[in-house]
Length: 232
Image 1 (tube, helix red, strand yellow):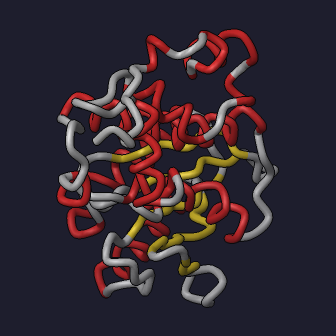
Image 2 (tube, rainbow, N blue to C red):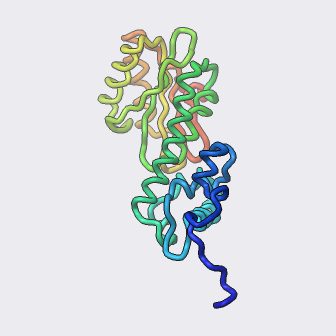
Image 3 (cartoon, rainbow, N blue to C red):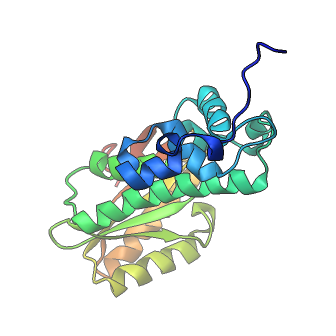
């Protein structure tokens, strides 16, 4: 017992070693992953500081992406990690994903191929546990006007999604669109419903003069492009 290192709360550390104070003094870019995570946690648990807990989490998951992919059962191994701390971690990871999408919109990126869209949206969509449908709206020069998320269901309930997509496209005066959704199973291969949905969307878009350039399915770090596969 005498040889065990004594637990010292972060508040009793020298000020220059405390993660929060280091961030405010030196900037967030100078902090380690465990220090950033410790700030999000706020507090540790009995006999362990927030830094101790953050190091354990990173030893288990290795990267922030893996942290974002973890389900509730995987978090139960960490003592002292209650619902409030877990909610803060998940919120922080999601903020990072959304920040990446906001940069895409602000940069008004030009789309030349399916890989451009997959590269933009895969970081956020590849690990989602539920199916999400997004539409990249483009102007006549194929520059991104907006990326919208449609929440009225999946391609198995096509009509409400198509109405919402085209309504948003007309609101933004979009000339073209590229639809993207994920397969939580990890297999990006299109289902019969995906194929039927794509045909219906293309026809509806033609009526309203909004061209559907592609339908991309993301899953397991890969993507399937209807355009690349000659299915449009």
